[in-house]
Image (cartoon, rainbow, N blue to C red):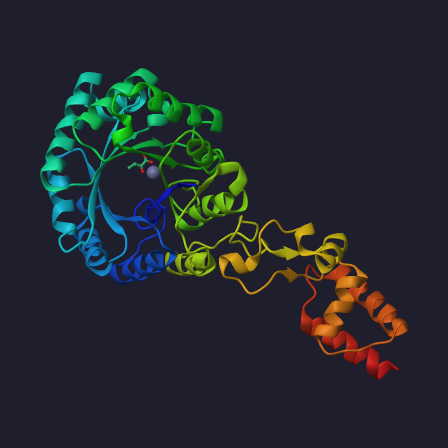
Length: 385
Ligand code: KIV
Ligand code: ZN
């Protein structure tokens, strides 16, 4: 089975979520947890952005022993020098240099012709290679770049000794079919492409980051980039936990796996949420509070008979104790009776029927009926009789 390398950018692209600012201590705490999760590579920040970020990247570089630590850099020497300084003390350092290649970015942001983009990127890779044996080069806004220009830039990057070439869908514009095809095309048309790893980096503006990343994997991507809980610029980045669990759950389809310790997913998600202040929506895939919760009577009945009726993965796999059967107005007698047993009540059939009717009345008025609500209801019922 093919191994997919995990490049975590929670501490860089994730930190670019509006309103998020991690200090050095927080970055190191998350980095240690990412190391436990088993990410292969982690991007710790953008050292040229501020002295504080340079110091934070340096602290992560010194703290992490079991993953490659990466610093981001624009294609300019001052930025590359900042990454050199930030990665002093790293066990396995890597620089990530980028330059935009799309017509929109060339015209409005860089004000460069194609040839200038090519020369600037070449110079940046050459300068980086003097100091780093691992150099990732990203064609920013690759998603809106002409395919033939992408081939030219990628061929140049391979020739200059980049070790990973990243194809970002920077603005989350592409569909899975289109994004997958880019990887296929590069694999078939770039001379020497087998010498480098190809990486997928997707944003979620149209809600397709996970699907696009999986399409890239199916078309030969060796590495995927993403963040925990999918945090990041605008609508965020690919959520790493979604990719890991898609590959795990549909092994026979993807024939690819990560080296992640899946049982660390829930803990990592909670830590990132707490330190970034970004609340995970209840219905978020894999790590949302409802991802393993069942409310309707039909589903609860199925779950009580056989869990695979309504769960395609187990909560234990990601480090949670158990699924939850939430009692609400759609819940049925089977789940209600189980709850009574859990709470220590052995009631006759008639008593269960009475309590169930009262529970339904209450459930019509409340979104979720808690254990305490049921206990109160039973106390009332017992004192009534
Ligand atoms: O989305 C993007 O293009 C990026 C680059 C810096 C790789 O985050
Ligand atoms: Zn990005």
